[in-house]
Image 1 (cartoon, helix red, strand yellow):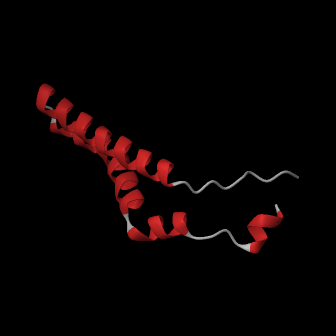
Image 2 (cartoon, rainbow, N blue to C red; image 1 turned 180 degrees about the vertical axis):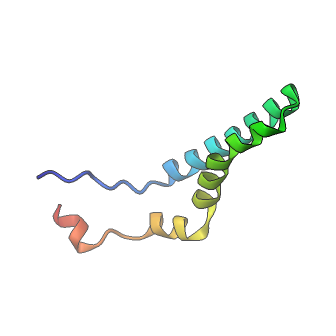
Length: 73
C-alpha cells in the first residue's frame, strides 16, 4: 500500500497564513459592504486556520527533521 508523502514546507506554511489573512479581510469587507454582521460567522474556519498556522508549534513541526520511520516509506 502506498503512503502519501508528507511535505512540510515553509512555503506552504506561509501561503496558508497569507490566504487565511486575505480570507478574514474579505469577510470583513463583505460585512462593511452589506452591513450584515451575521456574515462574520463565515470567518470562523478561516480564523481557526490562521491561528493554527501562525502558532510556534506548527513552525517547529515544519522545521523538524524527518524521522527514520518517515524515510523508510
